[in-house]
Image (cartoon, rainbow, N blue to C red; front, side, top):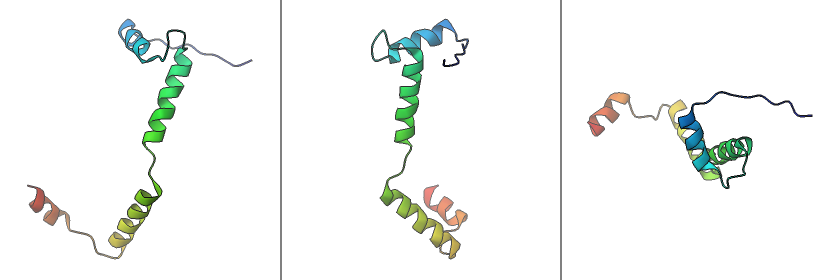
Length: 76
């Protein structure tokens, strides 16, 4: 048997959560887990993005970064 727990939420939150359900009978547990899963997928990086990040980190390690002061001058 799965152990269950309850949480306390305001009526305002409960009413907002109802709007996030895919259908009225969807459980809050399923709704929350679906939203968490969707959010986790949005936060992942593509292979190309990870490659770009690795290259940028290596450039910094090699001393090829742009000083903070120079960046601030360009954007202020």
